[in-house]
Amino acid sequence: MFEAGVHYRIDYPTTDLRVGGCGLLARRDATTYLRGQGAPRGVYGLGVSQTGRLLRQMMAEGFHLDDDSSVFDGLLVVIAGAKTGMFNRVRAPTTQR
Image 1 (cartoon, rainbow, N blue to C red):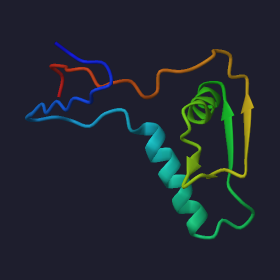
Image 2: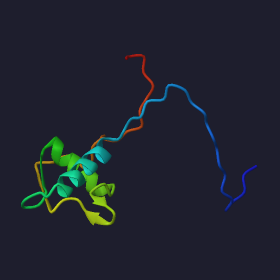
Image 3: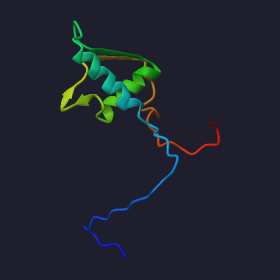
Image 4: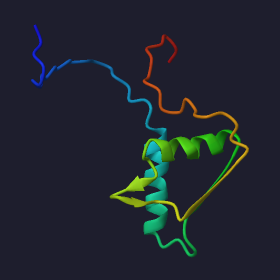
């Protein structure tokens, strides 16, 4: 049926698809924009508790890099108790609008 080492392409047409799970990308791109506007002393991230988990998740998944350079000059993560967060999950279908 499938052969090892062979690449397969699957096209799946959809309708009314909503984009979800771009929160980490949006934060990285906003930080890159601020840096491009001439941030006076650099760009630093401060995360306490949940926002600290978000910053750690960005680093773990590589979203702190833009064109192979860090978008932050430094991060201070305080009281981020849990290991990782659920910030970029696949969007699930719902009946709510």
